[in-house]
Image (tube, rainbow, N blue to C red; front, side, top):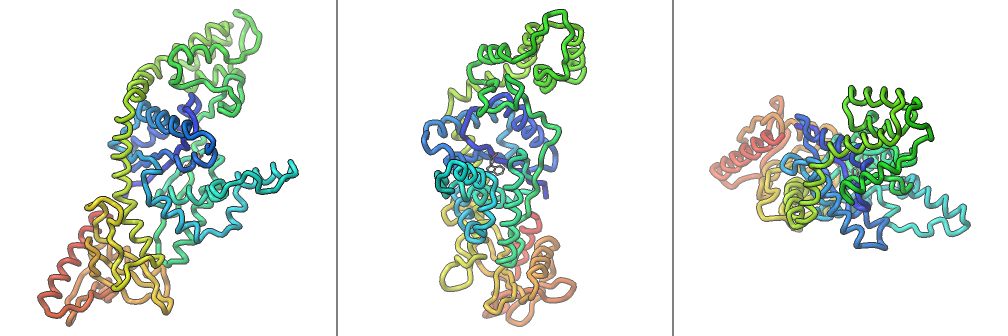
Length: 452
Ligand code: TRP
C-alpha cells in the first residue's frame, strides 16, 4: 500500500510568498514522489472558527487558495484535492470521536489555553469568547486525518500537539471498540523548508503585516513589496553582510545554489541594495510569472475550480463512505433486525463504496469478533470469538491479505488459517446454496486481497 500523506489548509486568508515557499511548493513536490497518495484539502470548517464575522472572507479565501494550489502545479488527477465541507462523513466521524475524547485532553490544547490565559490576565471569565468550535478544534482535525487513515501529516510546528491528540483519540477509539480501525498518524515537520522572513525580517505572516504577495496585485504589487524590504543603510560600493540580510534569505529560497553564491558574493563586493532588490524581483518574476497567469485564468473561471473540487470530493468519498459504514457498525449504529451493516452507500452515490468489507464487533460477553460482509451487505463470514482484540485484528488482516482457504463443512463452510477454522459462513438450507455463498465469499476475499 502506498503511503498516505494528508494535509489541510485553513481557508481564512490569501496565500503569500511565505505560504508558497514554506508549504505549497514542498507539498506539491512531495505529491509527485512515487509510492505516495497525497490528500490535500481546504479546511473550510476550521476557517469558520475564527472568521464568523466575515462569511465573504471565507468564501473568497476558498477560491483563492484552490486557485493558488492549482496554479502552482498541483495535479488533481494525481492527488485527492477536496474541500472538507464537501465530505459529510468528516463531521459525522468528528462526532464519534468527540464521544471518545476526554474533555481534559482538550483543556490542555495550546490554542485554548492561550485564550484562557489572555482572559485571566484581562480579569474576565476564563472562557470569554471561546466557542465550542475553538475548544474542540483538535477533534475535527483528528477526524480530517483519521477519515482517510493518513500515515503522514506534514504541518507546521504549531500543529504538533494536534497530531499527538489525533493519535490519542485514534488509539482510544481502537481500544474501546476493539479493532484496528485507525492508523496512528505521524507528524512530519519539514526542517529544511525555509520559513521566509517578511519585509521587516520577522517571520512572514499576515499578523505582522509584513507579507510579500504571491499573485494578488500582479507583478507591480510584487515589485513594490520587494522595494519595501528593510535593509541597512550601507551605500552602493560598501560591502554588505549578506548572511544577516533577509533579502539574501529570500533570494536563496528561490535561486539555485550557484546563483545564490554569486548573489552573495556580489553583495559582499558592494552591490547596492537597489540593484539587489531588482535582482530579487527578476528572480521571483522568472519563477512566478507563468503561475500567476494560470492563477488569473483560474480566478476568472471559478466554476472550473468548483468542478475540480467536486470531482475531488467524489474521489475522497469513495473511501469515506464505506469506511464510515464500518465505523457506524462498530459503534452500534446498525440496521435493526439482522446483523447486517447499514447499506454502505447510505447518503452516497449509488455505486460508491459498494465493496466487500470486514467489520469488527464486540459480543455481549465481551469477546471480539469480526464479520465479512459482501458488497451488498450479505454476511459471508463470522469469526470465532477472541479474547484479545489484537488477535482478532490479526486474523482479520490475514484473511484479507492471504486469500485463506475455504472448506465446506456440513450446512456451512469455514475459513481456515494454518488449518484452523477462524470464521464460519451462515448456515445454508442446501448444499447448492452453501456452495454459491462459499463462491461469493471466495470472490469477496479476492477483491479485498487485490485492494490490500
Ligand atoms: N489546523 C491546521 C492549520 O491551521 C489546518 C488543518 C486542519 C490540518 N485539518 C488538518 C492540517 C488536518 C493537517 C491535517 O495549519
